[in-house]
Length: 225
Image (cartoon, rainbow, N blue to C red; front, side):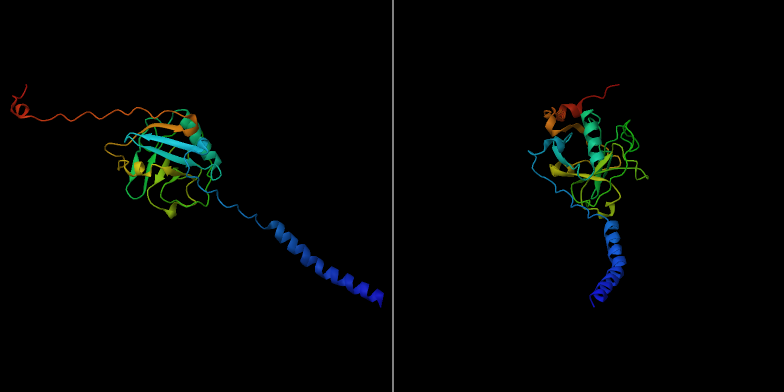
């Protein structure tokens, strides 16, 4: 009787072995759970190494939280170019009302970039909402280089097609006043781009020339040859 029980147990174990092995294999092959994306820290006094500051020609400052957890290589590229002074003086060359404001091309044509190699895409699950900052690219997914854009309103059609690497955490009102156009007739410029931890002072803005008052004498003055 005891031998029969042992034999029955052995047969049951043999019968279950393929099932257990199959379950173990399926567990091993299952993709690892993707971690939740890091939340945006809106405190401009914290982690200043990951805050990009844009001082604009409209006299306002924009603070962008860079998110290396989302796109480490793109964040590193932005920091590198910023510290090289690459973005200083560059215009917002493509600004579409209700969509986005694009910059980062020193030629101002939308076809330029830096001398650094293009980046491999780092598409992520983060949605393109108001204030999202993402890398512009050409047709190839791995063609992002220096140009980036700031989203005015949510555009979920961009999700997982462009690398979302940051979020405006202060100064979105400054973004809203960027001159529209492709290119704009009087484009808004980045006077200075800097990383907050570098503690660069706000650049002196050139005051616009005062408008000359038109007097009656000026209207009656004779025309010069």
